[in-house]
Length: 189
Length: 238
Image 1 (tube, rainbow over the protein chains, first blue to last red):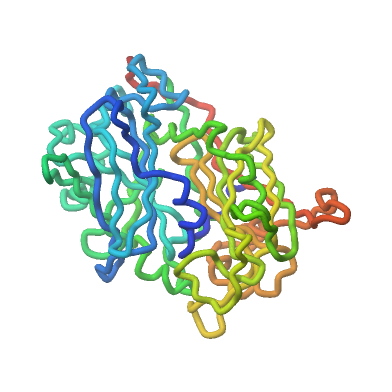
Image 2: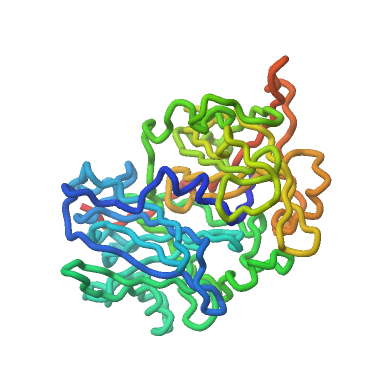
């Protein structure tokens, strides 16, 4: 059988997609370092995109995914699914409250640096785009197999969130550029 | 630990990011070559939602507006199966749908089409597939509506669907159309699908066996997500 073709979420996706979902992944009892992810989605003219939607999927603070195919002997955190969804606001901004994920296994016995898996949707996007958020202050980025596979340093940089501290809170800034100069690296996988 | 990857995206079935007929794709399409990535644990896992994600009434859009009233329009029953490329059912996966009302207007502040809103219709629903991968919604047939893509542009009647499947890479957002709609061959969003067979797969079929006498017409729309490769590879993982 052939895959059902993808279509855009259109301008009215919030009706069906963001009323009953949340961008708050972490609760008071979630284990790990609390972080906020914030960013803006930009189009090819550098204009912010007010009708985009971003979803994230991540491991918990120990580096374990809440999924039966993750058979690592690391603890599961009952308070953490690891998934969230954020529509962009009028200024094109999305945000998530979560915890920093731990490292997870990669191909050929490598270890992947802590990262968050990202799916981007928007009016005007016929197919969603896959990208990743890495953390700017993370030494393990140097040896991450996926980052290392991107030869161009400037392109690699589009996957790195920058650390900021705001009112004592740990914030990582991650902008998504759909097109043009500094276009975000999107994956085919 | 073993990693069994999913099949790659079938780019003969999916639209390109950039499709000239669909104006708003032009500045929002990534133009750089996608970076090929071998699937890892991050890609073969994904959110799985429990039964609590669907509340009673979520599958009946004719009565889920929180009023006591019933939506106006032509009542329709939508059924289908979620399968993978090897025809295996995808059980217990969340489907979210949204749509315009019978007059072709969305319950959404951005929609300014001069058609009436229906106080008894929100146009959003949720369903979890059963063990056979089957789903079922009761709703009203959405109306066509104008949009600004090109002069005298109208979207054919359609219902949006969002699905997760078992992994991060099986995610799909799509929409389906109703058979015989004269606007179908004119719709740039459907025409973005690169081949005729793919476009036909987005058109539901009339299902007389689903139609209920004295009540509602039935339509069937099956959805196919990525299949899974059977040869695993090993990764480090304690």
